[in-house]
Structure formats: structure tokens, C-alpha cells
Length: 85
Image (cartoon, rainbow, N blue to C red):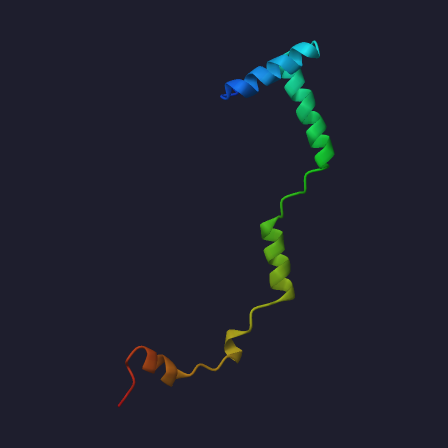
């Protein structure tokens, strides 16, 4: 069983006072408060499925064919200091 430990004494005392006035345990008071807060927030948005997103992206925007690209050999030679002088 997990427990919630409130380290701040003032906050822990506040929870205890509210729970006592509502004739509930601290656990019940905290649970109900956060159930209400969660209901106000609405449903949680699903996390994106990265793998499917990437597949769809690759389908819509395929990489260019390497056979269709002409490389400038002199540029690469110049960048690596291997140009023929």
C-alpha cells in the first residue's frame, strides 16, 4: 500500500482540519479533492505514438533516391584538403 507523505507541516495540518470538518479521513478528503480536480481537467490526451508518426511522415515525405543525387567530388576534396593541385 502506497502512502502520501506531506512534508510541509502547514499543508498537512490544513488537510487534517478540512478532513475533520468533513467527518472524513485525510485519505478520503485528499482522494475526493483530486478526483474533482481530475474531472475538471477532462480526459488525458493520449501520448503520440512516435513509431507510427514516423512511418506516416516517411510515407508522406520520402527521402530522395540516392541514385538521383549528383555529388560534387571537387567540393568534398576541397573540404578534406585532398584536392589535386
